[in-house]
Image 1: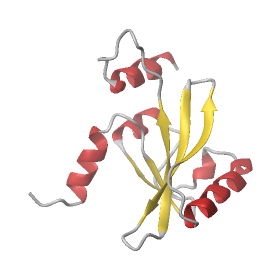
Image 2: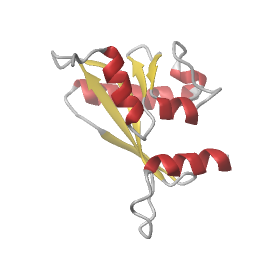
Image 3: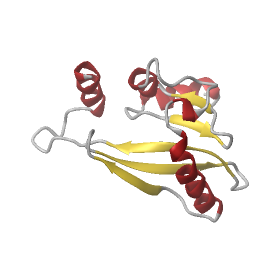
Length: 130
């Protein structure tokens, strides 16, 4: 099997967490299936990230990019008290090691009493509640 864009997209769509890849100009370039469901009507491929994040977050993102350019990998951003998620800035590098973009990784809470419940089910419950 050849690993091509369609296969990589299928792999990312199987990932139960949202992935919104943003390039260095802060333009949304890719969203996996979970991200499309979670951000439906709010985030669009080809648009600026700042259509859904306000401009006040731009200096924070630029600071994360500077740290990534200096060699740091994933960086803790914030604990989101509203959703219970820990959020991380995750730089993406090309084969030469240059940061070409980034995405925000969310660690969602899980229920210790139900550890075998797939994370996708967590999102389906969350989306229905919103």
